[in-house]
Image (tube, rainbow, N blue to C red; front, side):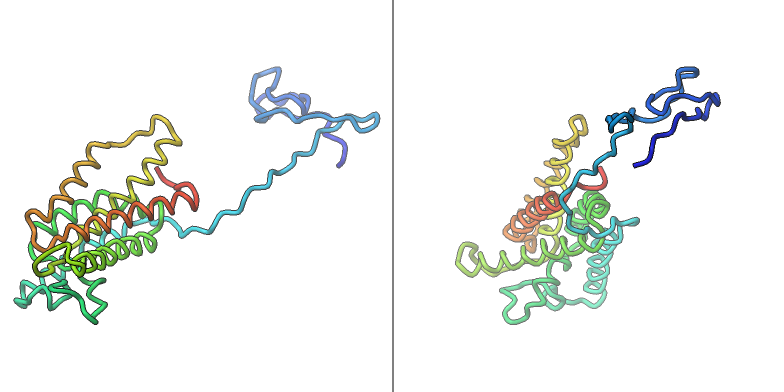
Length: 255
């Protein structure tokens, strides 16, 4: 390492000052964040070379979304399907809803969460998605958010059929709509946001508002036949698990 500079010129007043001070003694301008540590090498005093700390590598993350594309898709796609069902006078089972089970038609598990029988059910889920999913997209990226919503909905429908098959839920299985998708989004958002709040005291969030959204979604099966309670609970658990996984991979980039 070469010998240090004999002086540094202050950009504010033009005076020559020592390279080992943090502020100009003439005008008080901040020259650097901290003074370098000195060490003696023989008869010469030099600045100690800074050592870089080794950091554990982090897994690569998908880029955060500039626009909430996943949110738009999760709201517009079911709305279009509902319009087609109404216009063509179709039964919900004809476009993917679970009525009695999926059988060998595995695609129904993926389609059923985006099939609605009335506007009210879609409205409740769409409002929840509009509130919580954009924040998830900023943190996880659009592709990850889409995969999360599909997983919450699909696994929720699979759980609904599984519970019905063991006789816990009597009658004919009816399952469609995105109560599992919405509860999954709430669960993932809550897990990530709660962790951020613990890391940054004072950065609070509206716990009561989140509770109200979750309570309304959990109560949907009481007024909507196709809103299956087991699909909703399973979707919520998947969302909670996804939020924990996101925290394990690294801190969120947005608050």
